[in-house]
Length: 415
Image 1 (tube, rainbow, N blue to C red):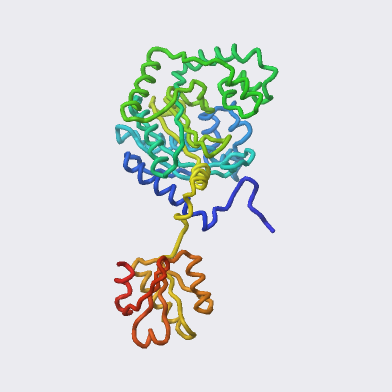
Image 2: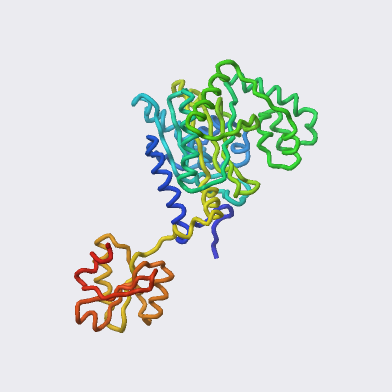
């Protein structure tokens, strides 16, 4: 038997209602904030991610799916969305519209990493990008939007952690400072972090190895921003304070990709255990210029949809989200399937979701199926009902039933 590849997962019909709920909730609140949907290809020129994410990152070195196509081009499955959206922004001259381009996306990403709870090799993200402004209030808006999305979903017990990496000069200064701090512990770091020490020491703070986490927790970290970046960060915090968004400043929030500058943030959620990060984001003011566009500031975030689904499941949300039929049409006796099929067609044409049992079974078995489907009502057709042009409507919630004239059934069900 051929099975799904390791690190991939089928999203089955019983689960899909939860995913649709996440997507529709996202679309609703993103539209309220003025963000418009964009879809980019899942395959890109591999150099896009090497240049944007950084050739020394784990994603590029270990996790990215890269292959040569028939034309000999180096193709990558996208490991994240920001670089693809920046490429689309530049290629399609979205900057010509002026102002801030507010974009959101929903789709699959691919990384060849060890599968774990809430993260697969093909995983899904939902996120936003605001391109074209360095105003600190845009940063505050993006953080507030992420928090509002969680609130709209009904996810509670989440925490926002905020930091600023400063400009490129600040990052270099901070990295040199951290190198001095980590140097005495170099031999105790895992092999991956020993490589990170020279390439990007900030990534040691992201390591999940217990020994590295212990060392990182004991490293003293202070803000070391230039005047302009410190002022920007203060204004971001003030913007969040004005609208009542709770956050905690954490100087160890660094984000793992090279393109981040200034504001970075992470949202964790209590129900997810050790892998508690549910959202991450930040500014990438240099990326568009580095990818041959104009010098354009930008900020965004991404949620892992598997993590969102997991948080909702632990919060006992999915039961009301499973797909269900409003009406089940049942027949009492043989020879009435054609009449039931005709009635079902009329209900569906009127926008009423309905089902029937195409296998001829007893009325009792049909009622069991209606209950399993979560039908609110069962419309029963029998010999007497058809003769009198009536049907029996059974309310599955209060177990009451009544006769209704067949020509009035749609009006009755809608009521």
